[in-house]
Image 1 (cartoon, protein in one colour):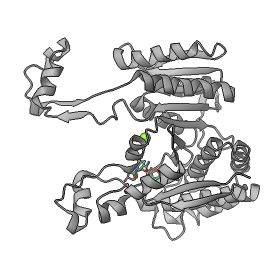
Image 2 (cartoon, helix red, strand yellow; image 1 turned 90 degrees about the vertical axis):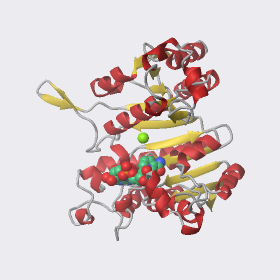
Image 3 (cartoon, helix red, strand yellow; image 1 turned 30 degrees about the horizontal axis):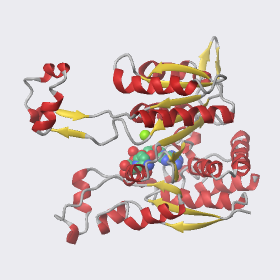
Image 4 (cartoon, helix red, strand yellow; image 1 turned 90 degrees about the horizontal axis):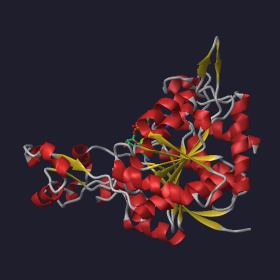
Length: 393
Ligand code: NAI
Ligand code: MG
C-alpha cells in the first residue's frame, strides 16, 4: 500500500474545526498517510509579520500535497494594528496566504466541481408549469488561478512611464485629462501557455470522466485580446478531442443561463475572475458554501481546500455547527489526485446516502440562521455530520 505524506494547514477559525473532521473520514476510508502540520494564517501574520511562513513553503516543496482549511484576511488598517508591536514600521505588508500559495507554487488550475446531491434541501429548484423541478447539476469548473485580474499588476496613480506606455494605445485618449492620482489601472494578463494548459486539463478531464462538452466562459466580444487568446487555445486543444463538444458562452449571459439550464453544462473553463464568479454561481445551485470544494493544482504541488472562509464568528461555539462536507469533498479531490479514486468514490457515496436519508442535516441545510441554539432545534453538529458519514462508510 502506498504511503503518502500530506501537509495539513488548518489555518484560522473554522478551518481548524473542519480539517480534523476530514482526517477522520480519510482514516475511516482506509487512506494511510502521514500528516505534517504546517503554520498558515492570521496568527502568524500577527506574531511573525508573515501569514505564510517560509517553513510552510518548504514543507509543501518537500511533500507536494497540501490539505488546507481556511484563513482570515483583514483590511490593511486592521492588519497593521494587529501586528506585534516589535514588528510595526518594519515594512511588513499583509498578503493573503492562499493567493500567496497559488502564486508561489504556480497552482495554475483551480478545479471546482459543483454537483447536486439528491435530497439536499438547498438544491436549486425551478418553476415549471404548475409545479417545480430540480435540475441535476454536474459541472466542473476549471478556473485559471494565477493570472488575469488577480495577477496583482495594478496601480492607483500609475508612475509616469506606465502612463506613457498606456497612452500609446488610442483608447487611452478618453482619459487624457484625468490626473494620474485619479486614475486606477488593473491589468488583465493572460499567457498563451496558461490558456493552453487549462484548456488541455479541462478537455482531458472531460474525456476521463465522461463529460460531453467543454464550455469556455469569457467575453471575447468586448475583452478581445485576453478572452480571444483563451478561445484560440480552446479551439487548438479541441482538435485533439473530436468527441467532446466545445461551446462558448459570455460571462454575463452565463449568469442568466445559470438558473435557466444549469444541467446542460459539463466542464467549464474561465479566466481567474470569471472563474471565481461562475464557481460561486454554480456552488449556489448545489448547496452553497457548506458543499463547495476545490483543488489548486500546479505541476509540482497541489493544495485542496473548501471554498468557504474561516467564518470567525462560528469558530468559538462550544459545539461547532458548521458543515464539514465542503472540507470532506476537498479531501476527496485530494484522493482523486493521488490515484485513490475508489476511496474518493466511497466517501462521496457515503455523503450522498446521508444527504438522501435526510436525518442528519447541519444548520445550513435546514436554512437556519447559524446560532448556537440550532442544535436544540434539530440541526446536526459538525461532528454529528462527520459521524453519520463515517457510519455509512
Ligand atoms: P466565510 O466563507 O468565512 O463565511 C460566510 C458565511 O458562510 C458564514 O457566516 C456562514 O454563514 C457560511 N459558512 C461558511 N462556511 C460554512 C460551513 N462550512 N458550513 C456552514 N456555513 C458556512 O466568508 P466571510 O465571512 O466573508 O469571511 C470570513 C473570513 O474568511 C475573512 O477573513 C475572509 O477574508 C476569509 N476568507 C478566506 C477564504 C479562504 O481561506 N480561502 C475564502 C473566503 C474568505
Ligand atoms: Mg470566491
